[in-house]
Image 1 (cartoon, helix red, strand yellow):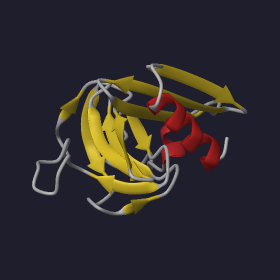
Image 2 (cartoon, rainbow, N blue to C red):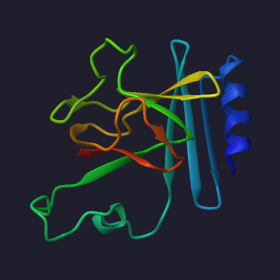
Image 3 (spheres, one colour):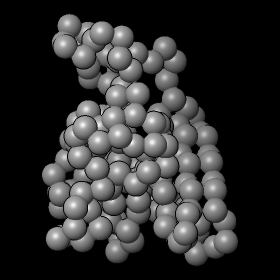
Image 4 (cartoon, one colour):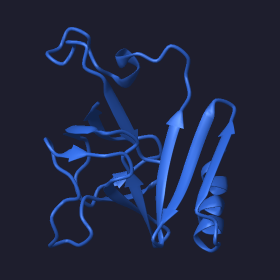
Length: 146
């Protein structure tokens, strides 16, 4: 699935009464969930035998005492926004507890504001982007300790 297909899917879901879409293709999965008028994007690359090393963690660091982490990646190319407005507080910061479905940030693409939601319950261990920065598809945004 390329970015053109993803943008078309986002437009279709945004302009319809559809609230959930899940697509799996060639080991790639994308989930779109619309809640109260906002589109919540979750994507995951499926790989066999995932380990912490696949997420760039070094097993020799201080976080290797059997703690699990979930990396939340950008589901599309766009501008990363940590809050709803420039003056507003960030949706999340390091140390905050989140639940599955909580909004972590907004990615603006083609003048559409797309919420990126937590896929797990846990604690924000790292925010990997700065407010207002451009992000690429698949770029790591958050590290969550499960």
